[in-house]
Length: 372
Image (tube, rainbow, N blue to C red):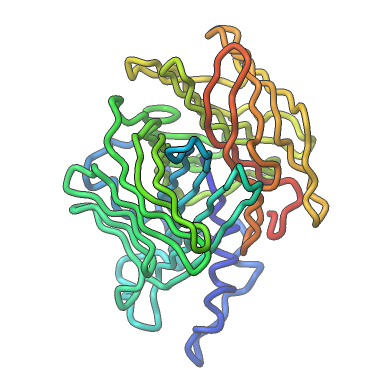
């Protein structure tokens, strides 16, 4: 779902400060955090006519976008792992007339990878940055590729199969993702995902909800052959949370009856569900149904507290009476906190209740560092 532009722009400017050439002005923090920080970039104002493979690639006219993969994998002995791989692109200045160079790139990429080793009770993660210059980072539509140094997601003219490669000295991912049996899902209004009533406070958003995945992951010196399913989210926009919004709870669930459920609960400053919360339920035959907030009942059942003090709801009851769903969503590991330039909780979950399954949960706005 939406990963906020103002967060990313602020942290990326700070991260690249050490690389800034002498004489290049430092952006004013007030300008970065203000409503004009995305001035000049295009905004998602109306439904988009999607075109592939072009829309799998970068959209430099928008301020930010991401390629977001999560998945639940098992080795041959049944050992469970969760993984996350994300590449973010952030535009620092609008306009194609502004040329990139080795020092003055107008695009910056940030990457996150994570592996949750459920049996060991450990969550491992890493972060990486690069300017989109001198081939250090970038994206193209055909043949598809998005990369950040040695971290990459690559495919062919028709996207699949996708090859994911990322890691450092502590953890590594080497996975191949096949096309699933279902078409991509256009989230929101034919792919226009509105986050508030303010015009342009929206994104273009599509998902592949179940991608058969196999390959190898590494933790330290140990390697594991794994297989399972992944979820791919693609989103681009030039907007942030609205003034009355503080964060979100995002669910991406793969049920054993062949259905998939996505719902993001936007929260207002009083912790209530914002009226622009949205989701979708994908049937086994690939058809999808939009979910409005009145149809989804969410109740946190248990919280986990991070060392810094933020409390995250890591267990939920999720009910959608219209579709016969009464689910309990439980974190497979309480501490799946991403503690990098931005802090947020993202991790593998187990689904039980009326239906069983697995998935991923993302929690933001609970007092993390760099909260808007």
